Length: 204
Image 1 (tube, rainbow, N blue to C red):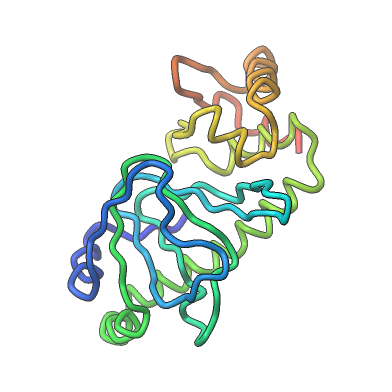
Image 2 (cartoon, helix red, strand yellow; image 1 turned 135 degrees about the horizontal axis):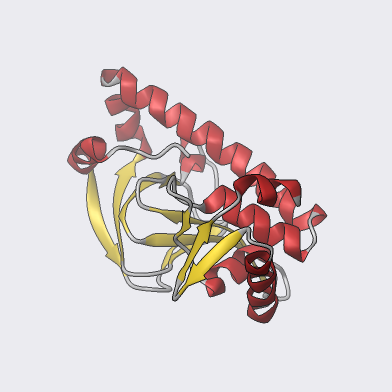
């Protein structure tokens, strides 16, 4: 996963402002004007869509080092999703027109940004595939594979997993127990660790 290295945070801060958001506080909503790009310095945010009947579909949960709001690179565009803080979160909010100037002056950051945005689009395509085509076991296995840290630790709660997978929490808990019994993962309080990555992949 491509993330923005902390050494670049000061560049974003020099062109924008730091804002703090409380849990469940909206950062922007669907149909809002897209003018700003956001860098997560601390915390996590939830990306979701609302149906006409008020049902929420969580697409992704983003953590520190991720950027969102890339629709602002397109002139006169509107937000297609709603994003809210999951926990106490600190963001750098930058007018995209100012960010473009910074990217021209720092080629390495520009390349990293393009890699980040390309990967974000690929991940969104994969999320839709998971929601549409996978059964409950496959959804949980795939989420663990694609969302874990490099050391194999999953930094999300079961509630957050259920929201991302469009499954209830009981089902997620049952699938985690099933994967644990198969020796594919191990669990401790509030933590999931991959034990057999190839075994998880074989389920997909």
